[in-house]
Amino acid sequence: MSAAPSKTVPTAARPGASVSRAWLRALEKLSENHAGLRKVAAGFSEDQLQEKAAGPDYTRYQVLHGMIQHDLYHAGQIAILKKALGQ
Image 1 (cartoon, rainbow, N blue to C red):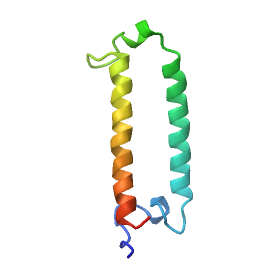
Image 2 (image 1 turned 60 degrees about the vertical axis):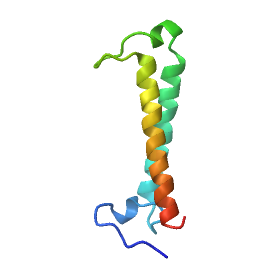
Image 3 (image 1 turned 120 degrees about the vertical axis):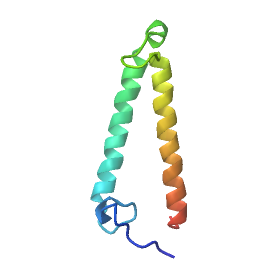
């Protein structure tokens, strides 16, 4: 069973689409961004992780954990969609 094409997501951006360069580029960019984040986070000392981050009243440690939780949430969404599409 295959899903009908989405009216909001271009065919080239959908996983499993016949033209998947946009999807592969998005995955590549995500990997690059994660590598950059890991590099920056690894450079923080314990004291620096406890410092306040720019913006709301959160430490760098809390912001990093929030980013991880955010990515995991979306990874779960992708897994559910892939399952629904039979992938």
